[in-house]
Length: 171
Image (cartoon, rainbow, N blue to C red; front, side, top):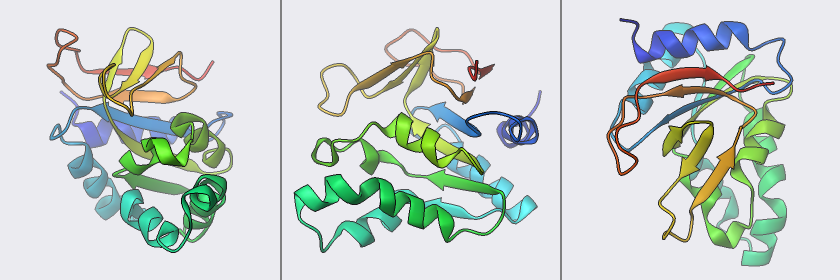
């Protein structure tokens, strides 16, 4: 059985010709997503960014309205500061905050046009839907047929146990 980091690495190798070079590592909390990214960063010398921390530092002095207007540019700046053709994002939950008024998937897709971006995604991939949070949560999002490579971790949740999958949804 292939490790999660090996599965992600396989998708990274296949990403360069894709329109969106986005790979999402999807699973609930504590399913090995961060460990897999750390393994890849150590093995390949790829930068890993704690997005919540990097983004929070830059949004701190802005008003709520300014934050919503500038978050995409700030994310672009964070990505531009990273060396190499592959960048790993971990802890992206801040992108879902209602005050930022963003479409997290679209933001990640736009960032992945010229570089391969691997990002953790705390949620589930069920059928052909990428889900973040539960429907009663204010940050709930559902994306049908996301234009990204999906590497799902083994999960057991309210959806009845999503099996580990690796899917190409890049059309």
